[in-house]
Length: 299
Length: 298
Image (tube, each protein chain N blue to C red):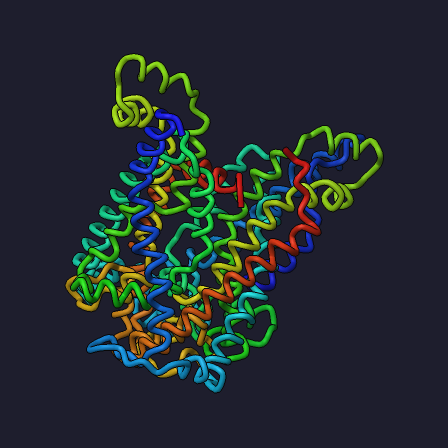
């Protein structure tokens, strides 16, 4: 269905403005009704997999085998959620995910504003050239350095700890640096001048004057860093190798440790993994949209 | 250099020093180090044994290397253009002037921030031939039931479709691009009698070419790195990567060599090749973009 409907909706000529001199009824249809019908259909397409996730999460094992599948479970199996958290050490994995996310978010929030300040509020020779180098590193895919980094971290005895996941975030990430820098460049220079006259040194200006003003940009960094850390898969997969340390990203695979996959439990667990991200979005919608948009200023 | 310039240089470097350290320790050095490892046989323990160009010669004769490269390019070539078109369509939808548009925007955007590992599990259940909604709809409509993750002909296409759930992210960037287009342009086109189709191709599309370039670059980079979906569908411990190795993507093959076959030297050589491909493709796209990207929009 997804493929089918995606291609059909791609052919749909979506009306941007609508004709000006049209008849009232036609105008009502083309401006109010048609866009809504298309939008609702597109949203249904995007929601369908998640609807199926939740519906499957509440199905009993017997109902799983019924064909045609029921759209909503006849018996709502709430207990799937209890079974899901005991089938694997769910809360241990959840806690690990939270710890990793917290560490990576703190790293991003501390390092990126500091670095972005040096790349924007101080004029020094070579600054912009070096910043372009930083932006260019966005194009280095992580797998390129994966093998070498693993060997380096394993020689430091950091493998099977959270350190290789968290420590790198304290050295800045190009995308977040870029985002904060864009914001800091927009603040008037006079702010810093006034503080200098008052005898503040550069670090005091950063902490007392600029950081409080940069809160919206820092919030965007924090939210994106948190979501990305929560969603991270490849790095925990290579650096961690004990049940005690796995985040949910790795832990969810244990629902199919035996020959048969416990699909309803897996979907119950997936629902619980997805909910924190959706809640975060609903709480901070504005920041998500700002963050994505800043990234578009330059490719 | 005046005294203030020198003082500023010192201060500036001090502020960016965490990045400089990270750039050297986490990027430059590992790239150089993996080039060195690429010339060795190394299990990850003990010391690396120099074997000259043997890893690179091995790549040329390795059918799995060829297959992983083929699978990755197949996926990328399909996923990038489809991704751009879907993102533009979503952006046009998000730009509709209806009162409750923010609800639609949220519904179309949220899937793009959800973890791909969870999305893949959901996809596996959604497309399951026995209890998936998708296959049920296919049978109701009278289409042949397709095993989206079990039939090697469809596995890659299936991941391309799955990736479209993430199109809401780039769509927001396109939306920002759409809103930056001055309304007067559309008004005068309308007076000239241009229909909505014509207006889209004559005004909208040329003016969002910078965003299209951005999305292509982003998509290529993600496409070359595609891994998680394949790893989850194939099951990490299995010997093949999906049916008939149809999901053996390049990074999956690097991963297998490094962490399952303890062939760190060969894996390093493979990752260096990925580095070269990424650079060549990015430069190629930027060169090509000169012919079609319009920058007149301030």
